[in-house]
Length: 88
Length: 247
Image (cartoon, rainbow over all chains, first blue to last red):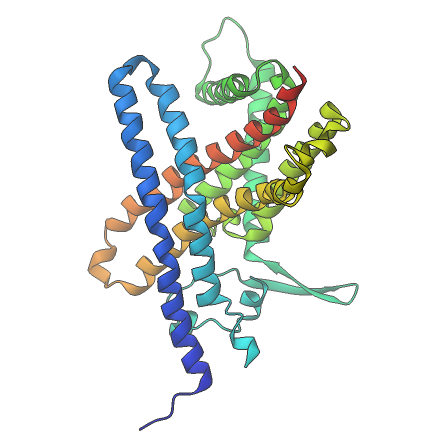
């Protein structure tokens, strides 16, 4: 049986950690979907304000996306600029 | 992502296929520091040059424009863009818009061209944190300058609202503005770049016909345009937010 080196172990755990970090994508998904649903309801009620509603919705969705992007940033750091390898 | 250039811990790149990193091109020394001219510099240079050429062409066209002629394609495009930006800034900022429309228009054009440059095979400059952070820092300086100019001492005391205990939270809130602003743009464009690199690098050849074109439209055009809009919109909203307390 071959030995697992320290570096390989850290890389494997980092890959798993990156996968777990992307669970952060769930929240923005729900939030953006909710915003889009509400916007659709608003357009149904007041079709004249469609352009205003659309721009407000897009702005809100982009802000809601931020937390997901923090998770993405952590996943990227773990995969491509791993700080843990330097601690060996 | 500095050690990316040194190419240290990049195990996906070791496969030889997937490549979306910033690459160093020319090394030079400045005050004993080892610095690199990277692909980002080249992309920014190309984007800036293309914007300049566009500006010069439009300038020549507009100067020669006659009120009786029918405007050509270039003039129409330029007028459409300027009118759209004017409207956008006016709806958010109202009376003060005239002061800011130049700056907002400039960053809008720059970020839009940067994001869309992924279509031409460049690595988008905005997928480098070194480009988005300065853009957000300019916004931050602008917000604080307006805050101090409009509110004088109120800028300081507003940090202690509603009770002094909230000072650390308010401070973090102020500092988080540029960080979230820059990370939003950076994360969106970088995720698009990474996805395209994965699709080009890892999928079998028959999947690569036609499908990447649709994805390019989503990641580069749609996502890039939305993020440009959001960046400019948030900059305006933050700046207006600090002015509104006066009236």
